[in-house]
Amino acid sequence: MAEQKLSGQALSKFNEVTKKIYKDQAIFFLNAFWKEFEGKASAKFGEGPDKVYTFYQQFIEIDKRQWEEVHKKVWKQGWKESSSLDEFFSHKFLEVLDKTMTAITFRNEFRKIDVNFDKRMALVEFLLFEYKQEVSTLMSRPQDENKEELDKAQKKLEEVQTALAELNTQLEEQQRAVAAQKEAEAAANRALDAQSKAEAEAKASLAAQKIAETAAKDAVEVSKKLQHEAEAALAAQRHAEEEVRKAEAELRAAVDDLERQDAEHKGKLASLDKTAHDTSIGIVMRARLRTSTLSSRRRILCRCARPRSLRTPL
Image 1 (tube, rainbow, N blue to C red):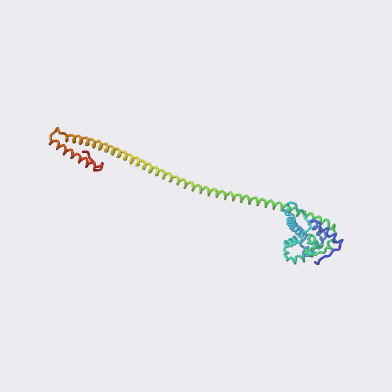
Image 2 (tube, rainbow, N blue to C red):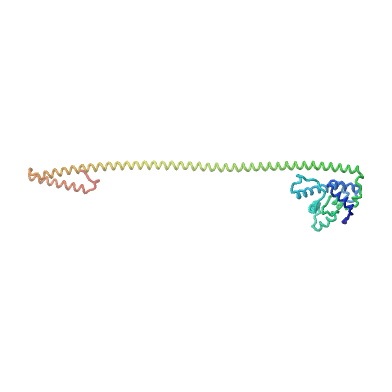
C-alpha cells in the first residue's frame, strides 16, 4: 500500500479517530469494513473479525509496557488504555508479529503505516496497513450500517473481553498460588537446612563434649596420680626427717656419753697423777701409778685421734 496523503479536513477527521482508545478504533475499523469480513474479500478478511480483536489485545500488551517505561511504574499502578504507540514500541509490536526488521526497513514500513505522520502508530493505522485499505475508504464508510450485526459483534467482543479478564484474574491467582507454594517450599527447605545444620552442630557439640569429658577424666586420673606421688614423696620426706632427727639424737647421746667418759678419764688421770706424786706411798707404788697414768693418757690420746664414730668406751 502506497503512502497516503490527506487533505486538511480529512486529516483532522482521521486524527479524531486515532485519538480514540484502541477498543473504539477497532470498532470503527470493523464498522467500516464489515462487508469485507462477511464476504471474505481477501485472505486477511477471511480470517474473520476475531483477528482484529487479537491485534487489539497485542496493542494493549505493548501499550502497558510503553506506560511502564514512561511512568517508571508497573502498569497496575495507574495504566489506562491509550490510543497509539511511539516509534520504539511500534517496532516492538511488529516484533511480536514476527515482523522483525532492520531499523531502515522499519522506518520505511512505518512511513506507510503512520498515515498522519505524527511519528506514532494508532491501531487503526496498523489495521489499514495490515488489511491494505485506504484512509479515504475508511472515512467514507458509514458507522451505523449493519448496526444489528455490529452490536452482536460488539457484544461478542465484550463477552470475549470479560472472559479474558476472568481468565487473566484466574491466571494471576494461580500465579500467586504457585508463588506462595514455591515460597512455602523454599521456607520448608530453609527449615530443613537449618534443622540439618542444627543437628550437625549438635553432633559436633556432643563429640566435643565427649572429648572434653574424656580429657577431664584423664586430667582427674593424672591429678590423682600426682597427688598420690606427692603424698608418697611427703611421707618419704617426713620419714627421712624422722631418721635424721633420730640420727641427730643418737649422735647427741654419743657425744654426751663421750664427753662424760672424757670427763671421767680426766678425773681418773688427775687422781692417778696426784697419787703418783704422793710421797707418802712407796717408790714402787708411785712408779706403777706413773706407768698406769701414761698408759691411760696414751689411750685417751689414741681415742681422741680417731673419729668420734669409731671411738669405743675405755
